[in-house]
Image 1 (tube, rainbow, N blue to C red):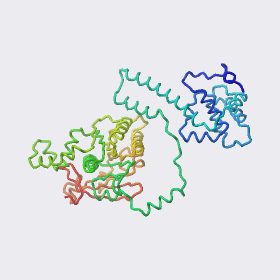
Image 2: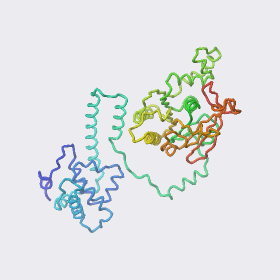
Image 3: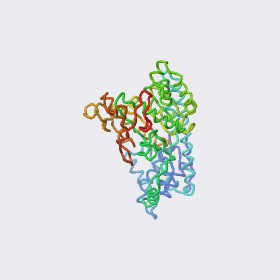
Image 4: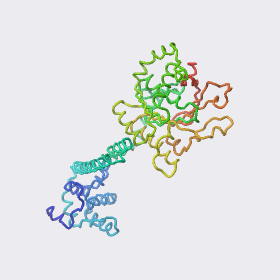
Length: 454
């Protein structure tokens, strides 16, 4: 057998100066030729052939991948690979001169099928190290630039760091027959509510099988001045203060102090206008004192950064999931988020809603996002909102697992017989029923409560 010098002489040596483990790359290329099924097995374990630095060896992988379905047990595989590479080179599909038949035959003898994972790991390790070094250089350059943006750039750094190691691409597919026993078991077992987050409303909890579920994107839509921030803060209070569930409230519209005032008033039943005027009496103060311990110990994180971006939000969520066990994120509201560049506002908002849904799934949390409705309700006689009223809706409705529309008749008709009531119209509920839940609107206390509490 020829030596490495014979096989990889100066004429044919790879030109790249990037760090590489050429021994591992050669052995892995030989191994997949000898056992073509490994291209699928290794890819399922997370190996990316793009990490093979030598284009000629990388193209051997792709040739085997292309040929694998048609290769027969008796076929001389390196010959089939050689023919494919020559064709690709003639067609301009690879820039480097392909390995010759002799080189491929020599390479084939280096196969180690039993150790393919080891050699793939070596290649991945070097590639990740190279990407890490390159990112470090980029971070240093950007950090010393006059245009450095601490919030935006650090969030991007975090996202790039998360992407350094490519996740395994293992299929999540399962046979129907394997899924049916659990499906039948669920059909005869009352669902538990251990992983649910109570909404703060008895009837809404009943409709949602116990509350919000992990991985859900919940969209709360309303026209301006309906009380959507008040409703959202109620959801956050029910989770964090009442049930001690770690919650993050991203308030893009209302400042932290103002939101704290709202929460204090709703918990202690203090008239918000009294608090703002500084005329809270001793009775109110006594109620506030009773509520303070629970509020002070609540795992409620409030952020009033008005320039929230999706990467920045993801970085914060990632940190809070790791350090605080975050389970609920509330965003007030969608259209105020810093949108990515897109061909239209509708596309940009769609990208935001899709990103929030992926955030919920990735971290296994519930994401509640408020959204402003267009003027559709005003154009109807009964003024009731519909899911289609979501402003710049794009894919918001499609991305959402639950859509709740907040409606108050007395917002349009002051003398309405339903003054003091609000409808939570569950217009979409993936996998569950839709209905309207009526609650009491105690807006002077900055809260909505169950009708039974009035």
